[in-house]
Structure formats: structure tokens, C-alpha cells
Image (tube, rainbow, N blue to C red; front, side):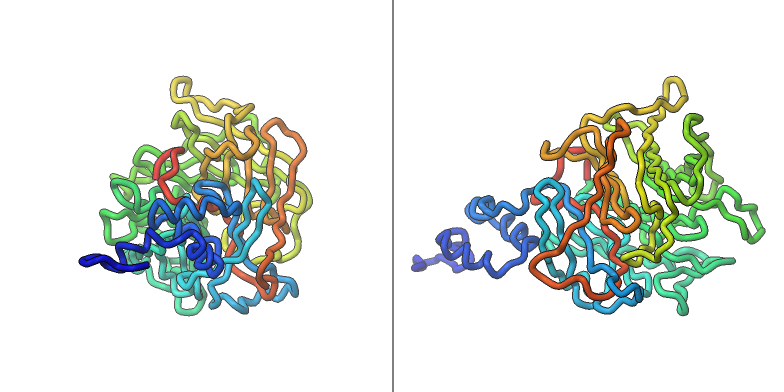
Length: 408
């Protein structure tokens, strides 16, 4: 590569021969290959010949199983994780320094929400290596980081473990990020790019001036039309107006056609339908899952050994009633991640993909009550099967451009 007068080395990187690009790719993991592909069009063309990943395809990020059942975090510091492609069944090992001593508690598209033992949280994009810190939870009045329990917040009268952070908008959104934190004991708070703090939401059972020892517990939370929505085990949805967070929430009754929860044999999730209506998804199973789990799961919904079927209901604003959803035009992905629909056309329609299912990485539920398919991904190319991890299996979409299914 001979430089002309006035040319810089940086200006000629795009003119690297393909053979040299392939030599560089041989030393990169698959996440880094996607990062390599966004550099310039010639490099993107070279990367397109690598069959493992393509932009926007649904993947599952996982970590090492707890083989010996000790539930000890042996190697959280190493930043290793598994990346598993649903459509091709490919499984690879990746590494990121941003993941060292951190675990994910949520995500949306190609962004993940990372947390450590001291409740420091940030948004991280493994493709671009962009890191966006979120405010400290100590910005909540009367709250403090618990010095005795990992990843927990002291907020009277309980110490509350972080369960999930629903990333409702990523930093790519024109208004910036929007996130809802979900703790144990029914504690919720939200933050956005326009705020420099977390805003706590009143629990439905809160009484002004009194300590609440019996709060309402929630299994999932999302944002819809400037409202935080949270659902309990019965399918009842509570709604908080983010413009008036100090006001008690309103309650939306659960669908009447749902069988008794039979706790803990049910998981309940929220999603938004393609037309923009609220949906509630009930994941049913049988045989209580007694084992502690192959992984340490801070957010556990489906603690049953045998997943059986799903029921989906959509709220119709006109009739103010719930309607049973009998089919989906695409596949819906739910779990620790913010829910999304597959937009690549690589997967079967009319299915719900659920991560964190008992002793399995994930399960595929036909909406029409057909046979459930269980997913377990053997990690190849590295050793991730030593020790336990708090890195819960979660859906992820590695992308090199904004996805087309609903925004950011």
C-alpha cells in the first residue's frame, strides 16, 4: 500500500486487500466481526461472506452453567459470554471487557443493561462498544445502596434485589434512553435521558405516611404511551403516568378467560402488539422446578420443569375488553429483554420464544397450543461450563443498522 502525497494511512484502510481483511477477521470473535463490518462498505462486503451472523437476527446470550450446583460466581471477571443464533443453531464464545465483573439485567435490540454488585448500571452496545452510564439509584429519595447484600437497594422497610431493568428506549431514540427498574418487593422506578435521577413509583398498596409491609409484587414492566405498565401474577396491570409519578396507579382488570395461576406454574409478560395495543402473555407449565437452577437468575418467572403452553390477550381500546390472540404474523421474543418481533423472516411465524425456562436456555411455544420445543445451546470454541453465573439467558439482536420493527 503506497501512500500518495498528502494521503494519510487512515484514508487507505478501506483499500485493504480482501486477503488481509480475512487475516484480521481470523483474530476477531463474532461480535468484533460485526463491529469490523460497520467501518466501511468494502469491509462490510468481506464480513458478509461469514455465515454465522447477519444483522438483526435473533440470538440468545448465555453464560456458563452451574455444573456442580454450588451457585458460586467463579469467573464473572472474565467477560466471556455465549452467543447462540436461533435460526442456524450456531453457538460461539465472545468476550467483552465491559462485561468484566458485571451481569446483564435487561436489554433491547443490540443494547444490554449491565449491573455490578454495587448497583452501578450502564447501557452497553457490544457492536459499537458504546457505553452510556445510568444515574445512581441513590438519587431516589430515602434510598441507598445496600452495603450487606449484592445488587440490592435499601428502601424501607426492605432490602430490594434488582430483578430487571426494562430498556424501553435505547440511546438511538430521538429522545434518548428510557428505562424502568424492577426490584423485589414490588419496587419500581424509571429514568430517562432528560433526567439525572431515578423516579420511584408508588406501589398500589402504599398508604401515605405509613410503611408498607405487604406490597404488590410484579412480574414484568414496560412503557406504553407515557405510562409505566406493570403486571402481577394474576394478569392485573397497573399503570403510572410518568408525568405524575407521585399519584397512585390505576388498575386494569386481568382477562377473565385465564385459568387460576397455580403459583409458581405461570410466568406473565407484557408486550405491545404491532398495531400498538397492550398484550399480556401467560406462560404455563407443570411440575414445580425444585432445583436451584443451572444459573443464578435474579429475575425468575418460569420456575417449572415442564413448559406446556401460552395464552396471549390483546386489550381493545374500543370495546375496553381483552381479546384472545389466536395467531401472530411473526415470532415474539420475551424474557429478560424488552419484547420484540422477528423481522428477518428466518423463523416460523405464530410462535412465542421465551428465555429463562427452568433448566433450559429457552423454549418455543406455538400460539395454537402445539408441541413446545426446548432450546439448549452447547457452547463451542471455549470453556464456559465452570461455575455459576448471574448472567441470565436473554434474547439479543446484534445489528449494524437500526431495526425496523418498532423503534429504538
